[in-house]
Image (cartoon, rainbow, N blue to C red):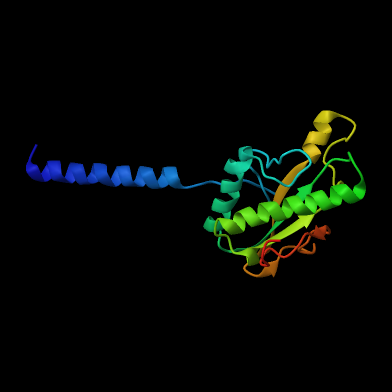
Length: 173
């Protein structure tokens, strides 16, 4: 093999290695409707708005999604709960949880103007509250695209009909 051929082969191998690395670093995201599908649930310490460490991979997934998709100008953070406890307490808890998630994202560099934190309390169950499994499914945080390039998606209000939890651009309490 000539020096020229060996040099070309080495360069070609380097190019393939670089391409493979780029492809491996490319993240893929799955949506259901306008909602981002998470690798695992966002979880909190029971009865609180304190994020559990098990939430880290999904929170990083949302952060990467927003960094990679700059055309998404507003993402709604929806917090939901089961029907255990009073309606008022559940509503307040979901608002606090939505804010906690939003503040985490802002602390990691996401522009607060791209996020809206909304609590739904127990108003939008996706499963029966009659079983522990159903209640577990109802305790969730969802991330819904609401604006692309500054324009609302569809006819739904940006808050999705929930209670806006607070201003993520304001100083933390």
